[in-house]
Image (cartoon, rainbow, N blue to C red; front, side):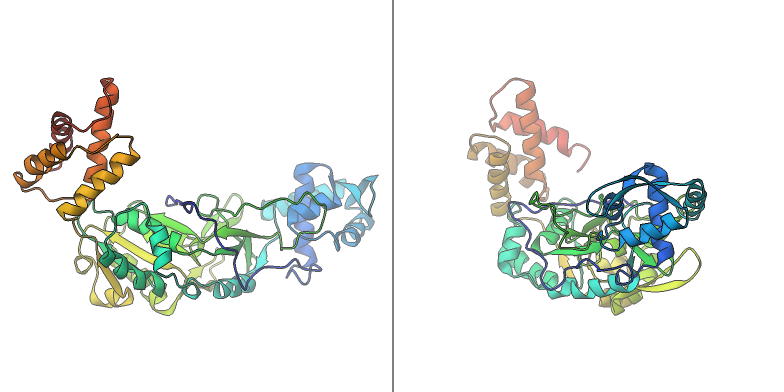
Length: 437
């Protein structure tokens, strides 16, 4: 699968999701589960654990304890479970009988998944609509907060604002080193609210894992320390709006449901994991598939806001396609895709080279962050005149950071104070620009 990244908000806590919050079901029927599903999960859990209380079984399945005593009593009467010990509050310690162990192994062969009970697919679809990325419309203050550690002009912010606000997606293009990826990776910070997603989804009998720690960042909960029923459905998890990055390693199979023949469990594709969040296709045009293939795969989802995926049994399902999708590329969009695709990505934003004034401000900003005591104007004048103006070299947004890092390393290695000097910049420029320009 493609690598995924999550970037936390800087000095800001997310706002709690408004309008959607999964409440715990009162019984198995209300949870959208039948007795066979519950039995399979209970027996597989006991097969791996050996002994467990009724409450620990309920906690493992993410369900309230209420309906479990009667359900487990039925399994006891069928000689599938044993009572190993009696506890208070209508609970027991349970273990498998030989008949129960045989049945548990059969369930395990069908699907080895053990964990929170699945959420019906229809409930997931409804949750995506209720928490759509288009419902949260960031304003200028949100952008200023999200991009506070980048130097963006007012013109760039005013261009980005409507594109982000639309929730539809955009191309971010321009010369390498001008911060396209940095801008794209911070877009998710503009969205303050959190969202709820099911950990596992039941899609027509197939279990599809949606929650992924490498793609989703859970919201930390404050524990009250009280033994009370949870106020939320524990089969769901509250996360920051997803931010998924797929680069040159993106493959066509990463956009389809992946079925594991060993576990008999399926994994949701990248675009499904990014629902209600952002999906960045970085270095667009350098993926393992030609751009036209990605065009053909997503031309309908980009227009209709839904996608079609195929399950392991060959059945097709319609799933929401609800994310702010970003394409970052060093090439002009028209060199990569045709007009039909460009029409479905309404915003095309160029990350231009900084002018000299902005370039100097970037040195001041990064010098402070990297521990330099002050900016030497004469040394900076020498760098710009000698290694840019005379060399007809364009300014790039990444140069101030990269050159100062080299100066910093040079000073630390030689046990020198962190200072900007002409000879230090000459040394850094010689190393940095030799193979680049």
